[in-house]
Length: 85
Image (cartoon, rainbow, N blue to C red; front, top):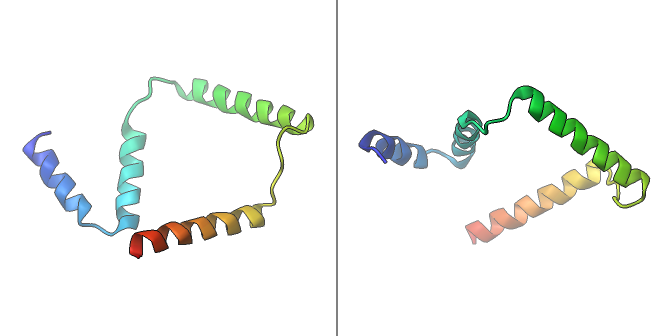
């Protein structure tokens, strides 16, 4: 890693976690995966169809969005408490 990259990383690591998360997401999105937008769209459509078919066959359980958000918030609280404690 170059000296400049090390300085940038050191400065970024001093930022609050939410700001680091935004920077990390932007950086991750900036790295090419070699797929065109059309290929990505086709893959998402194929995945959506696969999931819809699995739901129709009874292989996947649908979860109410409010219930899922409550579960995710509870999980996030537990992780935060473990890190803080």
